[in-house]
Length: 332
Image 1 (cartoon, rainbow, N blue to C red):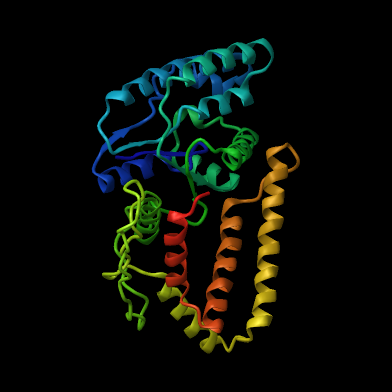
Image 2: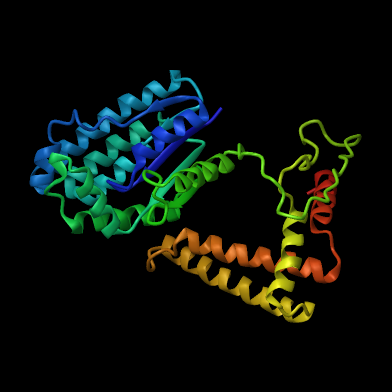
């Protein structure tokens, strides 16, 4: 059973998406309670003066709510994670106040459950400011653009280095899941896919010739499941190979395998460049690349692998499943 948390900067739509996702998963909804913080309105007026009181109240309130997770039914959808509290604290506190906060946070965090999936809604500062203005909460009317921009950058850096749970990044600049039904469906579909619960897909048009590959389970250790049966209408790797055969013809792409192998190396180099930037950012050198850019380069690498399989007559799905059968029995 899954515990999913939606995260992002103020105004990005965390609570809205969490409410939409909850009926899809059929579980329980746990929303952050921030209106009860008596210091919040004063904090947005004078952040330096009220930062410590505001942060400690939030820390203890969030911890108390997180403790109820142990008894909460699954699936569970939340609109925040406990770890984000420290992110705000490092922006708003300094010196002895920050040191005291971090000691308390470290002690409490050891007893907090980690989500099975975090959905990170990312948006540019101008988009965030527009959405904050549209919802027009009284205590947010004095919110400074520089503060929201610093939060955005802090969130980007935080999730670029985050490794405690899987993170699915959604581009909230492009996806308007509040007003657009298609965007809402796309967001929910991608979350369900990340949980392994994606809806069954129709094969790509014209590419339905799939065959179930029988799993040879006689010598498979009990703890290792056999390769999954991916037939019965779900999209398969062979469908994507067939799609690229069609695309090559439709676009009149050069199908020379050696030329495309060079292009594959070029795409691997572009992926390596982004990963080197990400590696450097984790050590404090510059800003991390956007996760969607890394995903785009990975997609390019996959596309050229599929094309190369076509040109060389390789059934990549069959080759992959066979190699994984071998790997299951190898002594590593």
